[in-house]
Length: 191
Image: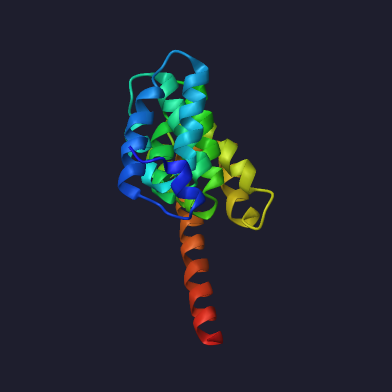
């Protein structure tokens, strides 16, 4: 196998070799030794996008530590392709996996929020999902998306949250889509 570190130093990337290395490293995520898992996770993060497909598959592992390590690596890589896997993982039986998934959605910013909102529309009945969603929404409530997420957070405290949360999430998703269309139209006029 080529020495990927030396190739990277020279500005050369061999995607096929990176994928092969990523596949081998995924097996190390299942190791009982936490140091081996951590080393594999950081190597996968360094590989980046070529490792994403393997990490997404690892998110389906029956082993909790494999799912958690995969979620942590995907969070660091920041590829929007992980958004749906993070949404699914918000219902994981492991609190650690759910936390990593929530952090992953936060790291994906706008794309993570949109994926979360679609998830809230479909899975508001899940207490674990709502717990993770609330964490993500609180993170977004301090920034420029505050006006979009505050009504959803308020719906969590409503008399009928299982009814109101999906409604508020759908409205927020529409607002984000409208904002995107407005931004594109405005940008096109400036050009």
